[in-house]
Length: 197
Image 1 (cartoon, helix red, strand yellow):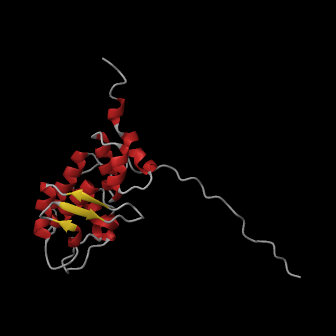
Image 2: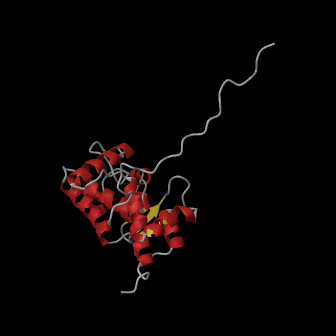
Image 3: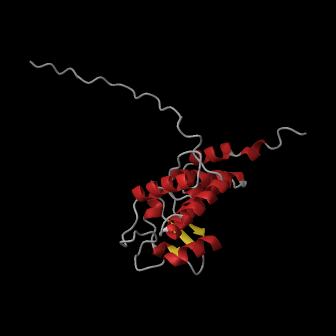
């Protein structure tokens, strides 16, 4: 008879500690503007890189959503962006405003993808990560920047502008309001009336 006692021991994973190496997980509007301006001035693909940062920020796009963005999702004439969300998020149609339209028009080419390499192939999420990190250094930001910070920055900015949680959830494609509630918790304006001087 053989011993059928399990040899592996079930263990729980240690609890994940908060990020100690990042000051915060979002950028302010001025920091995003610095990032866009630094991208515009960096290299021969500055217009593409600046447009990528602007779209990721203004529409809360994940890196995967940005890199797979196709011209068929963009209506330049009517100023509309059809956002296909990753990770099971809710699809939506966002308005495109003047700065975005001006940034996108020069990028039109033969590729079905909006953001392409010099070889004409779609950019990758690894490219977006490297580009954001290098641009953050060029913008003299005091901490390391990563692509998902742009999505967090969208939520933070819109929550500070007073957008309600449900509208913000739909804008970011969240199916669960708890995913969105963190942005409203960061909004300092909700404490504005606490002290009357």
